[in-house]
Length: 113
Image (cartoon, rainbow, N blue to C red; front, top):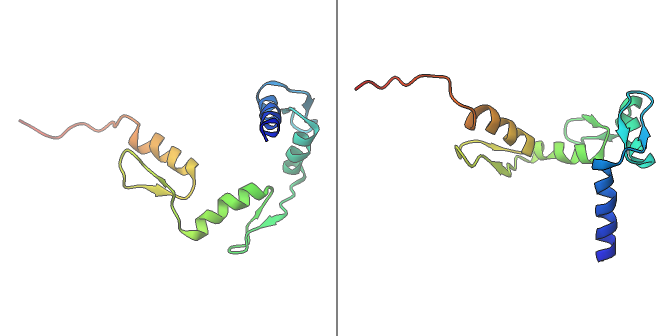
């Protein structure tokens, strides 16, 4: 089991450091032939994974899986700053944090003494 984890980590780390192949369509550097094959789906326009709820198509199963959370109504990501906002996807929470809860507010205080 440890060997499998080490091998998986080694393959993963290559995605951050080692560019061995370049996409001829857009010039993006990729770490393996398998990564290039997954990347080429974008250029081919293939979207073989369809949402059974709304009919949207996706180029990767992982994108469909993330999308399906919208239909369940389960909001696992809650803002730790305001506590009011909750989201189905982590990137929506990150956007909220950046735009609402962590940015300096430009309005001025209206309290007078």
